[in-house]
Amino acid sequence: MQKGFLQSLLESFYDLLPILVVIGFFQLAVLQQPIPNLLEILIGSFFVLIGLTLFVQGLEMGLFPLGESLAFAFARKGSLSWLLLFAFALGFGTTVAEPALIAVAQEAANVAAEGHVIGSTPQARNDYAFGLRMTVALSVGFAIVIGVLRIVRGWPVQYLIIGGYLGVIIMTFFAPPEIVGIAYDSGGVTTSTITVPLVTALGVGLASSIRGRNPMVDGFGLIAFASLTPMIFVMAYGMIG
Amino acid sequence: MVQNLLRTIWATIADVLPIALIIVGFQSLVIRRPIANMNRVGFGFLYVLVGLAFFLLGLEMALFPIGKLMAQQLAAPEFIMGVQQTGATIHNPDWSQYHWVYIFALAIGFSTTIAEPSLLAVALKAHQVSGGVIGVWGLRIAVAVGVALGIALGAYRIITGTPLHWYIIVGYVIVIIQTLYAPPMIIPLAYDSGGVTTSTVTVPIVAALGLGLASNVPGRNPIFDGFGLIAFASLFPIITVMAYAQISAWWAKPQ
Image 1: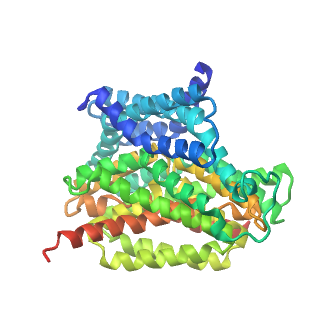
Image 2 (image 1 turned 90 degrees about the horizontal axis):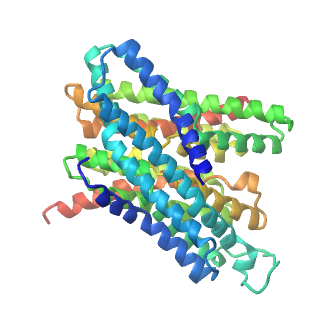
């Protein structure tokens, strides 16, 4: 622990302060209502503070070193296929159980049922939601594979991302209109709070252990792929489904 | 409360379990070398788990109920038409009547992004990798401004009922043009910042805002029109982070 716990706690307090100010201002000055359950809000805010502080400490102690040590180990092993298999497993495995994704998939099934794309029985909705979850998880696995391959080969990130944007735009004109909103949103919900530090450390670690790669220019970008491919895959799912 | 805490810890463990299994599997079957400082890393993982559980439980207790209720109330006709007329409905509302909604969207987008743990993680890493050139707060504020603008524009889109894809396509065009001129060092980080902004803190409150608007503005259907705010919140930070780098580079250039 480089920093004292109290100092970390204070920093977390600064991170949280803007939300408290915004909520307080709108409740008291704009909506002009008293703050309900003040005690619960105080206890909850204290939990948020403790949680954020522990998370940041654990980040520096656990997640960052773990991601980097995995990257170094794979670089030392020198086997691209194992690295890509790991990349796929990490992308697929972290996304398939993501609670935010489960919620979005269920909502998408409701939209599809409302728009008479699928039947409105619970069975049909569950099948549709499950298929969608698998689609997004596959697309994130695929994204991490492409992203890792890009770091290893040193391809510039912008061509791939701009190519992906063109893919999104083209798909938009062919996909059923009801699915477009969900597809666009699905890009944002796939990357969870534990995945992001781990994947970032993996990318930076890989870029630092391969000769000729710059950790700043080549190490970042994995998250960008993981939030781009689900949009394309979900629209494709809407077209097939 | 203890029961809730245990339930949240359990949910977090279930969320982390696939990641842990994959790492342990590859570590023992493929890499076959022990991780350096195993105990320290293990404790760090535990800190992250417990920290995240406390964080989520605290949010559920303190911020989400009031934040969600607030988002719904600000979009409700009673508030838009004046508090005294309860049960009023709006016919042909003008988009400018919703000015408090835009201000709320700006403020809540900015403030929830500052508290977003995954953005903090990426900012810490970028600060370390860039050798201190990229400031932790500079990056976080640039991203938070992007999310604030994105959510405000997204709220405007739901209120006016204009098609989502035109906004997103114009946004992409701006990103592509900026990519040509931005310092190459910032480009991958800027692309990444689109994906990290919307996770634990931002999504629930923003989703409530979208749903509140789509169910209260006449002519909107909550099922079809409530989406798109997350997409805006993931697109605009890319633009503001590149703009931040472009302005810093321009500022540093001798005149």
